[in-house]
Length: 222
Image (cartoon, rainbow, N blue to C red; front, side, top):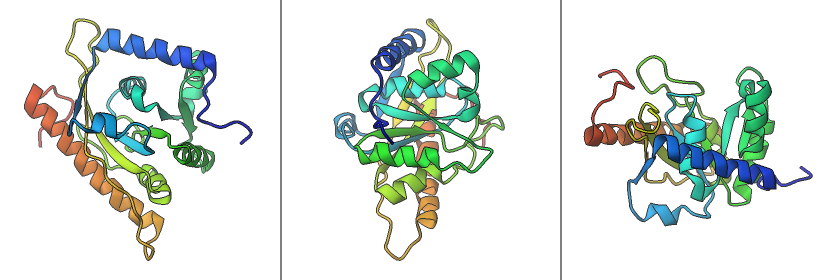
């Protein structure tokens, strides 16, 4: 690539700040850490944040509340193709990914960002959860982690995006999952193992939020 992916335009940086301010004004985020030391520990380290996905606002919200780590958010190609929305998304730290066709460009861009000690935010379910449960995590995020050694950070997003005076939107940032693929194991197999661990951690983090703040009907009772 002729231009480093991690170099966002000046206008893009301004627009990103505007989005962050808007998210904080509308949803008044409450950010919790499984370990208070994580807040500073994760800064400047290559990592892949993974989270549950129940609302179209998750990408903007996640990118805003994780601002100190400057994550690039994976967004499906169809959103980039929308005339106005796509233009605004292109200004932000976002990477287009096609779910309907073979597309290796997004993976190359992710590797480049991790190689520059950047971070990513990925929603491994691949789509909004509409069946009352956290769907099985796809291995893409795990494959990036397996190939680059970037740790995976499981996050649980909790809330229904009630603006201004509604319930505060929350996120719990969990303990990182270290990645070191054994020499005798294929990256693909190790990636699946990583994502199994990540999904278990996200589910546990979400359950912790439910225990602390109550059930809000995002997911069906088990």
